[in-house]
Image (cartoon, rainbow, N blue to C red; front, top):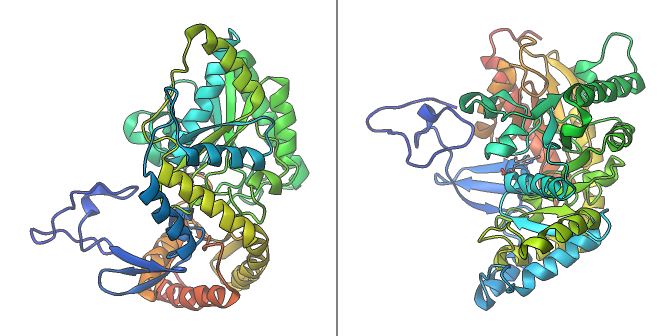
Length: 457
Ligand SMILES: Cc1ncc(COP(=O)(O)O)c(C=O)c1O
């Protein structure tokens, strides 16, 4: 992206996410004004194929008329009524019932929010609340995995073991710990097979719990697949082994399904794809295809019951937010789930994902490519990184920076995570449209090669 600033190009008033603030000028910003299907259009009329679903959010693509109609209808009927203090709205109640009927949690209960960060904090808060109810007031620590992403509010950022989110603020807060990602490709030792790698992972985590004092550790939070760590796909035995170890120490497993929920991995939830038995689950993004902000933390009945008993003595439950269970957002989520179910989008994602994976594997012969991988409708091409500073998903790589920069010039938006380029298109994508991703990607790749001083065929 060109970096220009002058008196005629002052920085914008809006604070952008995850970029140098001094680069925040109109000239440096592609300003989207409309979208249709898998495409978005900027204020100059340029078309971009959104191969990331816009930060993993717009799983139905843009302009889904059925979803828009449901949102419009709710806007006319009752746009907003906050749930709580003996009042509620029908859509939020219906949505909670629907979600509870879908998740692999017994007698679940739902706390709605508006962002993934909020949902992760709510899930943790419920666990901490329950621990207090049990008299385990010291059990507060949380473990996450290096390179993960769970949000950017103070606690969610503390659960996000990435320097970028933490450095400036002196985070993580005390008691927020980090451990190894199950990234076999980048992190296995010489001669170590996948099974041994998983065992080492679990032992590392167990040692951390013991070192901290197991009675002080409340939760382990993980995405089924870490997109932020460059699409880290764990072995199928990783989560079952992790869960049984965590159970020994009464550490709850919060499964962050903010990206993987509602079809991305080829099943409704990433927990199904990776044999995960969550203690709690969180959702956002694809929950409403990102048309309206909404998120959810889902807790099982046993955690709920303990909280309920405790708050009975207080007479009320001291947790809430004005926009939680927003009626229009709830209608959007209900309709999104309806569309995902009736169009069988998880199965479609699995099929289209096989084709996507075939396409990325074609780059294995590229001189700078070191790995290709995929799961469901997600795929990554990992390029040789500049050096080993940082960690997977955050390794410095000038070449992927160039691809990221050149792709929009060729009508394509991809995600760059360190030395990997990720493709996570809307779940409604067709095979021809996947071909179109790679037609455009080849142009961006060629442009990056031309601009990369060290590139040699
Ligand atoms: C896995 C995961 N969890 C949580 C979040 C935080 O969600 P939000 O940006 O809505 O706060 C994100 C955002 O990208 C995410 O990818």
